Amino acid sequence: MTTDGMELAVRLVGEVAVTHRDRVVHPRVVGGRRCDIVLGYLAVNRHREVTLEELADVLWPALRPQSWNSAVRGVLSRVRDALEMAGMPPTPCARAPGTSD
Image (cartoon, rainbow, N blue to C red):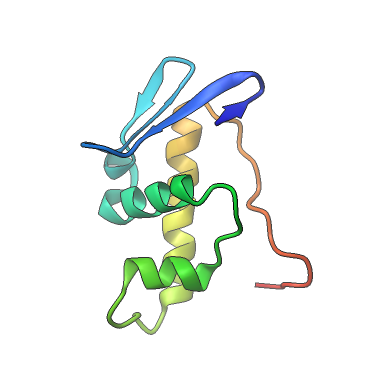
């Protein structure tokens, strides 16, 4: 992936890591195992829209917690924190047209 002419690399084999402009950040340190899982899933599926429901299914394949929506949003916040720590400029998450959630 590239941003502002600078390459962003997400390593998914072995320990998950984000590299941007020679900065390396390990998302697990920032947000735990779920941060690793979500970042990896988003990186693999970067060319398509991924819904909160889909991320919830990835995080809790058997049974979602009652407050799954806010839990997924919290994990996404930690993923953004990891990207910002790697030097990525903060950007809002895109929403599908016509959605309010």
